[in-house]
Image (cartoon, rainbow, N blue to C red; front, side):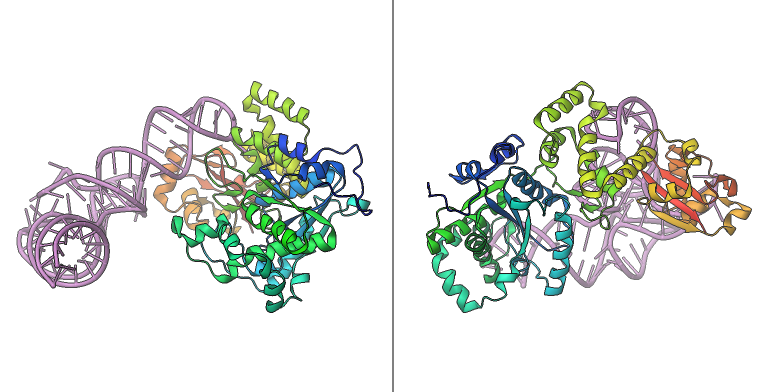
Length: 447
RNA sequence: GGGGAGAUACUCAAGCGGCCAACGAGGGCAGACUGUAAAUCUGCUGACCUAGUCUUCACAGGUUCGAAUCCUGUUCUCCCCA
């Protein structure tokens, strides 16, 4: 394993963190092949992680991998993000029980460009020796033909070996209702294995990282490198899959995935996602998704234990990650909006709002427009809530909500179904803020 | 092919001629308490002009003053035997 140091190796500057050690205490290390730690502490290493271009945005589920690359770079190593233009056309069977739909080339290209922009927010692409890079495996796969591939790659890996992978086994034996698997998907591990080989050979990449479900695919790569080129210096490292204390899937809410793209998931919703992390989960998250040091985290935890109600950990986590993804300004708006919607905001604070405040704070709140003429003569509240805005499904439902003290207008409880709404109720002469309970809002805009 | 059981609101599940808009549980929504949490407690959970009316118990007919409840047919589900 102790190879002579080739000239192109750059030794690792002393001030950097120990990558493996860093991942370990953060709970981000699942498995690593023997020898990797020694390599990583002795010199600068180039390593990569693949991203799947099925959507035009990365989601919080990908953040673990992004943070892994970030730690990798901070430890003085050179990170490469591989976006899977080619693998995206094939589909990774890992963790899936159904054959997946394939994407066409133009959509892939679009998705890939969007993801690239997001990665650039985390990684430093211009810091000399260990600048991050992005590669697209379509660039080398587009020149490979089928016969060439089965001769140059397929020849080195036995089907027995491929069948022994968990991701394949589960699909073959049909356990947990899994469907059969096409040859295309079966081949996936070879494609990903070849990526590693290609990068190892041409980009001096020694390490492939990924989620623990990628272990099988990654080791196919190290196997290929060993068989095809006798390379013993290819290593694998995986991070654990994030589990939530209640067993539900991380990265999703009832309303869907949490994305990094503000067009898909607004900064406010993004911020709220982290704020709402459970006490048990937040201790893991803050280690994984922020760069805070051990001392900072332990101090926050002490604070949290002393007064859990203040949710120091959730706030620190949400602020840190929202700032990194969406910037300082978006973070402040998200905090402000949270204060209004969940905090002690009353009608008095609402009255101080400018139109701009309304637009930014309520950007995420569902909105509805009504005609100004309606308010000239006054409109019955029940009529407004059902017929005009559809906020409630039936008149009876409104009455029940009012009897149960569950409806408010402009943050003030309203329980009289006979009430008429006029221009005097408007905020800033154009808004009405309706709410069911304390979390469900509708902003009505008069036009 | 033969025999049997069953289809009730979001889900499970009572009801077996009038007291049924239909017990109960879960879920959902809201209130109190809280930390925008958990646990707990309370109310609501077909529609409508809040007043009794109307439309609901697989579907279509029928018997009855009156049916989710009885009869006939249709569709579907499950079980047993071949």
